[in-house]
Length: 234
Image 1 (cartoon, rainbow, N blue to C red):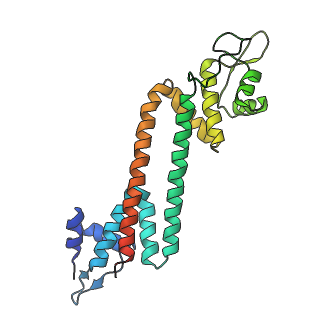
Image 2 (cartoon, rainbow, N blue to C red; image 1 turned 135 degrees about the vertical axis):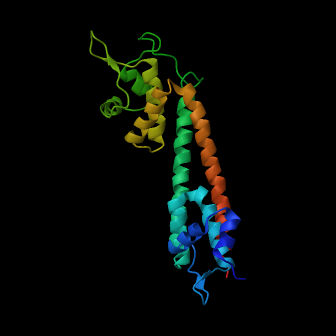
Image 3 (cartoon, rainbow, N blue to C red; image 1 turned 120 degrees about the horizontal axis):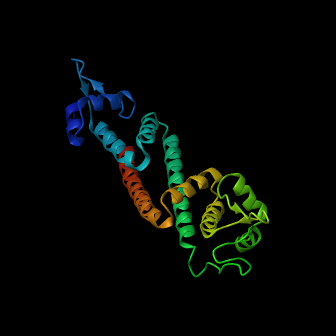
């Protein structure tokens, strides 16, 4: 079957120039030429375009293009490596989300211990807080130097004083560190919590975040199916 650029374009609501651009970018295999010099496409080109468009919501435009160029260039292993990296990124994003959800669910939950008896309710010091988390006070001081949590100082003793909000942020940072996340990434999450005015407004953002991750995971399934079909197209 011989197809024209307009035939491929119409199927997806694209312009013929977009189809030509995709070919020039290596996303479509090179087209044959008619005696008059016009591009002539085959079903394989239509399958390539469908595959590329299915890969975009799963891996992003740049990675989808790189996958198609690798496949069209005979580097299937390279294409699979790009897909593996994209899956790993999605898994990492999901892990971060779950760690944040767990951390936001801790303050006020049955698992949250009562305030230390030696201080007023909602306030604690570095030693009791470190023991509560099973970490060293030096770790909390390191987080303070990194700007994650900056407790106020008792004007009489100079001791660090952690308010209920500080404790919430420490719990969140602790969960994210246990998940293997870096201090810079944790600082960004904490800033989001503070900008939102606490964890409650952030929960709507987290639900949207989970929805995007789910949609991307489903798109990866559709993209994989389209790529499998393309690889089997003569």
